[in-house]
Image 1 (spheres, one colour):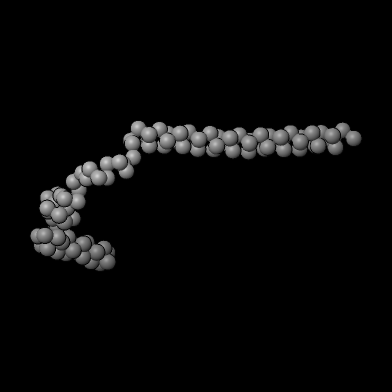
Image 2: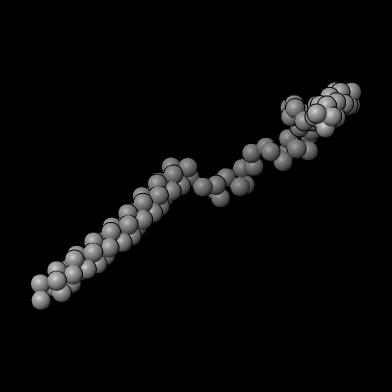
Length: 103
């Protein structure tokens, strides 16, 4: 029981300490938006010299979709192949058991 009381008082102490040290540390934890400076704005600005290297969104989206479909088809094929082999093996066992049981 004393251990439980010590833990609750310790938690209350830590909670009060974290509230006391609020200030700038708590602002960064909340993730408040900070306006970018002029250098960051210049780096984020669109550069016309790089426009020919940008990927075309529709083309990239189509290629991703084709890749996703091919992945699904390959996985489904593998699952089907495993199923077929398992059922054939089970039928072979049943036939071997039936053949050995009749003689």
